[in-house]
Every structure is written in C-alpha cells, then in structure tokens.
Length: 466
Image 1 (cartoon, helix red, strand yellow):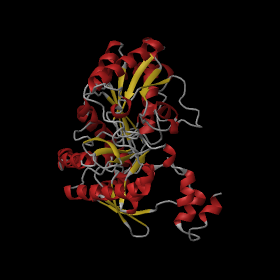
Image 2: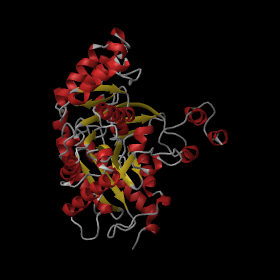
Image 3: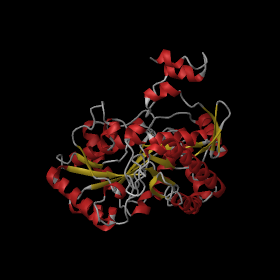
Image 4: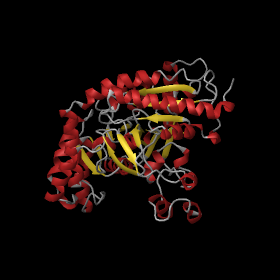
C-alpha cells in the first residue's frame, strides 16, 4: 500500500521517502497515505515554514511545548557550549554532572510542593512510568504492598508507554494495544459542558464527581489505592478546564484515604496557565509532580519527576540491601539537555515570561470567548495561553456531529490552508501558542481561525441543525 500511495509525490522527494520509511506517532496512518506529510523545514519565533516556503503561525507551540518559540539563540549557544565541554555523562552508579545538579536545585526551588528529590528522564511518558514504579516501590518499602492501583481520569492524557498509556483515559490510545493494564482505574473527567446533568450547577457537578471518586475508592478497597493522577487542565482530552471547586473537593477525598496526588504538569507547567504551574491556577495540592515539554521549551528532550524527601528516604536503605536502586535510563540527567533546560528556566525569569503569558492570556481568552457566537461553536474554554473550541451541529442544544464526519479535522485543514497550525482533538480545535506570542500575533491567530471556521461552516452547512 505504501508504495502505491507515495508515488503521487515526486520520486526522491521527502514526502515520498517519508511514506516509504517512516512510522509516525499519533497519526491517522490511512489519512497520511492519502494526503502525505507536512514537511517542516525551518522556524523562528512563533512562525514555521514548510519545504514549499509557506509560512504558518504556530498555534500549538509544536506539541504544547515550544514555550520560548523557535530559534532562541541563547539556548542554541548553551547547547553548543555544553556539547563541547561534556557531550554526555551518565548518572548511573553515583556519577553526576553540574547541569543536572543545578537544574534539580532550580526545580525544587520553583515547585509548588515539598520537593525533596528530582529524577530526570526524556519524556512525559517515561516520567509517568517512573511515577508508577516509584509509587509501587515506595509502598513496598513502607510495608503497604497492597497499595498498587492508580486512579486516573477519563479524557486524561499521561503518555503512551505501557504504564503511562494505561493512565491515559482516551480510547484511541488503548485500542488494539491491550491497554489499560490491570490496576489502572479511571474516574470521570471534570467536563462540565458535556457531562453535567440537566440543571446541575458547577458546585453540584463537583460534589457528584467527588462522591463518584470516593465510591470507586471504596469499591476497589482504599488500602489498595496508591495514587490519583491528574493534569491541572486536561490537554489532549479536549482542553478541559475544571470548575473552581473541583480539585478542593477531590483533595478532600484523597486526604480522607491518605492517597497520593500526582500532578501531571507536562502541558500546564512553566507559565502555560499564567502562573508557574497549573496546580497554582486550579488549587491543587500535589504530593509528586511530573514536568517535561516547556521544561526545555522542547529544544532538547528532558522530563523530571519531583518527589518529597519522605518518599526518598526509605529508598536509601532498600537499595543497599539489594545492591542498587534498579530504575533509570541511559539519558537520565543528560548534561546537554539539563544545561538547555536550566538556561530556559533562567530566561523565563529574566524576561518575566510568566507575567507576559498572564497578560497575553487575558487577550487570548477575550478573543477565544468572542468565538462563542459562531454557528459552529458549542463551547469555548481555556485558561492562560491555552484554549479549546468545540464544534457542534447545533449550537443551541450542543448536539455533536457524528464523529465519522470529521468536522474538527476539516476545520484544522482549513486553518492549515490559511497558515495556522492547530490541533483537532475530535471536534475540539485546540490552541496553545508559544508563551512569547504578542498581542498582534494573537489577533492574527484568531483572524485565521475565524476564517477557517467560516470555511468549515460553508463546507458542512448541510449537516448543521436549523
């Protein structure tokens, strides 16, 4: 199939060779072989150009991650210097390097929790796998070996590796992969627009979700629950912003049963919600935390897991008994990745990026709310510099389109034609521009999106309820 379908591109072209050789992550492979890939050639600031010279405004910060935008010379300089000084140095068997130590110190100082130790990886997926392993390890060490189950939420996204993919609560990441694995549970999402009962206000909605979580805990046995994991704002699940009372009520349930709260800040961390961490925006009180993506503004792959000191202390004696702490990755604490991430966080402070993101977030949210009256739009939601626009067949009742109609993808394609990169999450168009975006560029973003919505409406007008 691949050979037949790639032949419509010039022989030897990157598009043709891609379709012959690449296996793309998180991609509809059937559609890919029909339309071919978008070849990204260069980028600068909040703009990206393809191999035909067409310019796009980056409406998704890559994958929720290029916080400082593209081509930041200071990060390029630091990467080059560190490559020349120490291009690689493992942190196995007691070895270390200065950039990793300094970055760990920096993260501990920034964290909205009692952070004691920092473990480095390369992605949010491996970090959330680490979270699961550390929880099992810790509970074994303190004499609570029955505490193994982890509760996540429907529509949550925590990665695609075995444990992280099991934590993820989206069916498309489970189908055909035999996931989730046993011991990974899911409770409701705080998706008020779609999942509130008739006449249910936000306070009652939060009460019901908290009661449902408690019922799940009791049903599964509180003595077998290790943790609850949550994104402050659910990103890939549709940009689901929780009602104000949600996390305080969830926290009460977790405290009652002494269950650890894992804060997955992979998308929300480092200014995305207008504050340093999403937990601060939605009133979470995490025990442990996962960070990645904007940690380095995606210039190099790096992730981190932050745990309190009390979880680390029993690991010391246990590792002595068996001869090692048996978890780690070849690139844990990679000196070049750590150096770039450290300088990235320093630049965020020096340039007051969080304050800028908060100010631009107000402009962004104002323009986002302005889309609510469009005939295709059922709901707009967001916080800071992230937003979701949910497309519906009937904006009065919220009646959705049939998923097979692919209206979200149609809209994203029109946006792409108009020079705007978005991400369709089903029929929700997600937006997440670099934190360095300006007010004029926000206007450009929404002008392009409005044009895409109008073009989509014209194309699917026969599917709209009168």
